[in-house]
Image 1: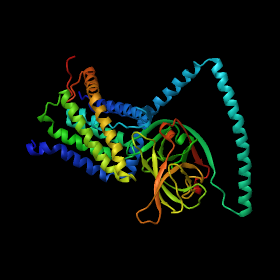
Image 2 (image 1 turned 135 degrees about the vertical axis):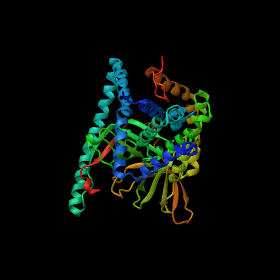
Image 3 (image 1 turned 180 degrees about the vertical axis):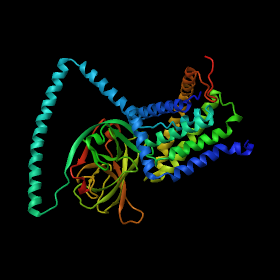
Image 4 (image 1 turned 90 degrees about the horizontal axis):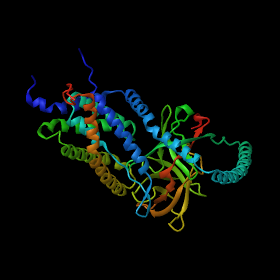
Length: 278
Length: 185
């Protein structure tokens, strides 16, 4: 029989053994285990998202014919507007291609647009993530940019069989090279100011001294294209505060982000057509 | 005849249910309007509740299995380095297992107190671990404090339900959670 003193310490001895085993386990095993545990829970995680879709379907079915006709008219008007934009985009694309050939420039990275439903929003004070309902089954890749109508949503950080995890621009773990609209000099953007009673905000660092912004005259912040992940010119938010940094060489400030980021239901993933370019 | 012991699976299964419900609540709490504030967001952390039943009611072997698996399941859904919850849940489990004989561990009020204290410890430990990466730690602490407050209220409110759910499953299976012996209905 074990002495009583050891018997009392047995829980801590067990914990010590668990800790030791965990530290000695190879990383491959841990990666596999993480993926396995995520996949086990994935069907449960996304079930409620499908239930909400069914709920919306039946709610829509209850609309009267008059309402549907009115909605159809509005949609037709939107389609006409977007048709014109598509033609303009084709023209601009052809112009870019012509200039690239003329100046012998390397081609711009090409993307395939993959819309996806948001299955789960996980917005803690520690991190901000989304789980979307598309994964390896749609060729989503780790690092792919995620956007919505208001600009950048974040980047894909994990890809699973039928789901993927997106790190949001509001998360403190998210950093990207950006620039003030109309300026080519890069600044550093980081998410992380997520207060309980206000819309999310981010921070900017290394802003050149001649750039200024305030609440009344905000400066639009866009991606710089440096780093290769995000195409240039995508909207991040508006710089609403700039103050000189402690060393006086640059300015630091705050970025007001789109409040819709907290209630996203659908996003678009920019899947690189040629991942080797990145 | 050797009987397979599924007690750990019962508790692990209910913990998965709680993880799912917690995630669902956080999904809807990510954006709501409250008292004139248009963009409110809070997040619930229920980690303490995931350890309580296994540490107070189950035998050591089943309890450890359930707690460690729950830790891995929680880690796989979070942005934490894989194994963080495993170690923290394990630590809370070891402390509770060490001292549980001295307390009225089958009392519901005691379970609520334990769940609250465990949740408080886990939340603060994780916050100290993660807040360093935030560009404005002082602002982050204000948000974390409100999340903690809401989480503690939620834990206090649902511990009764969660403990009786687990008790009911064992009653349905006619099994004693600690000894594993068959009990009369």
